[in-house]
Length: 380
Ligand SMILES: *Cc1c(COP(=O)(O)O)cnc(C)c1O
Image (cartoon, rainbow, N blue to C red; front, side, top):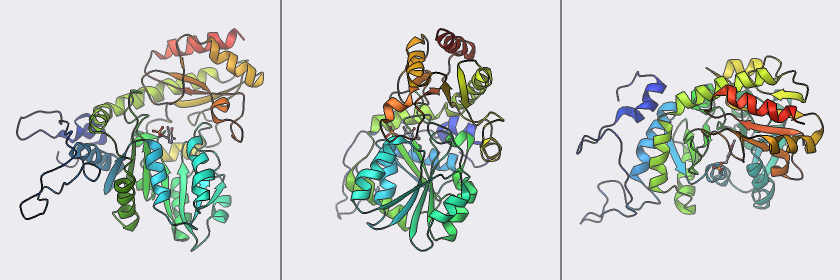
């Protein structure tokens, strides 16, 4: 597809590729695990084995490159496989700086296995640039990790400023952009070196596959290591899942836009509700990171919000028990709206307040979502 078309157009047509053999306007699935070797022992097609190279990945990785403005992308079997690969590409003893509020399973892996393996992991409030600047050690810190907006308080970190702090110290910046999606934010354009997605969430959008992605600004030494981590550890996505992921990505823009519009309306409707003590949503002018989010995100503030319930954990759990339309389930970014008492998922040691309900706003009629939730709140 010729350059110059806008991202939404590129996504809708999955770069507009047509199969030259059949004329099919939808890419096919290549299930082969192994590829023919030439008589001279080489691989003229560039492909030898599906753990190294999978042709079904190619249109997905090409579309990610286009949407994120990156040089190369890699698909992984899950968001966790993609995120942990970044840290596994470093050396024991390397110092990394990560957010205090972040995806809980990654926080658990960093504090447990990664630390035992010898990574020096430091947690800071990455929304506070002074603290971040102190935590990043020149010549010693190798990587700064951001998640913005951060799950599940939706705290917003400044990507451009963090990139400057990281680069000044000789470190790289990686951003978990799962919640922002390439529709709302382009971390590489703001100075990040790597962008990661749990493609399980908005990129696929249908709660029916696990996948993760990494996209790099340039194909440097770290990227070579990342390719090797995927090849050697084998956390690769199946061909059918890669094909489904591309199908999901074709509707990414309208899905994310609708979720943003509905989430904004819902957040505004819940402010001042007698049972809701706080609404956490970057699209509210009262939210601490709102001005930064308005600069850094374009076209909306995301489909995720959280509410804090008067009466603490018990009242929050009881509210979630009363909804009829929202689904009580973990995960986010699907067509169906989800509600979750986050502290019971994250367990002890979680920085998440125990009166917090996390809401993933899907594609239902926003008035139905509001009515169901306000009925559940009122019955408390
Ligand atoms: C879900 C999620 C992950 C992990 O992705 P999986 O596909 O579940 O492994 C990482 N980061 C964020 C922000 C997520 O929401």
